[in-house]
Image 1 (cartoon, rainbow, N blue to C red):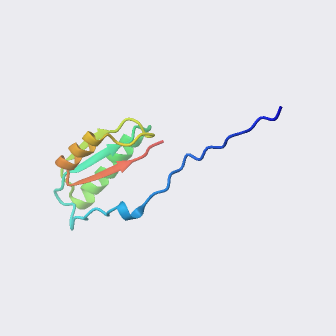
Image 2 (tube, one colour; image 1 turned 30 degrees about the vertical axis):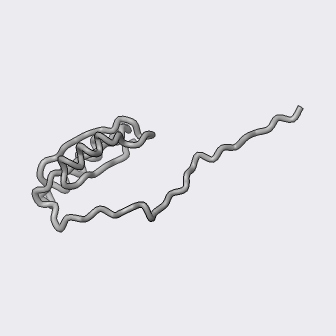
Image 3 (cartoon, helix red, strand yellow; image 1 turned 180 degrees about the vertical axis):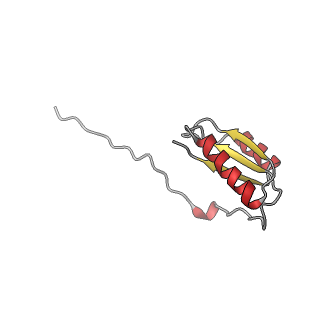
Length: 96
């Protein structure tokens, strides 16, 4: 008896025409920054380190930290909406 092996392709094709670049602020001075960790080990620490450097060198204002909790899943829309409403800019990171 011959067994068949079925190969699945988990990739998807993307469409860049639906993507937009964010408007870049002229300065980071005084801006509120969102720090969005992805749930992987060290992602929070990486973001805190980047924030401290940017705060010292570019005068960032306060930070609002959140964690999407699972690197393999998209960020929940309500979390993104909260960050968008509270922050001028958002930085995300992947740890390990």
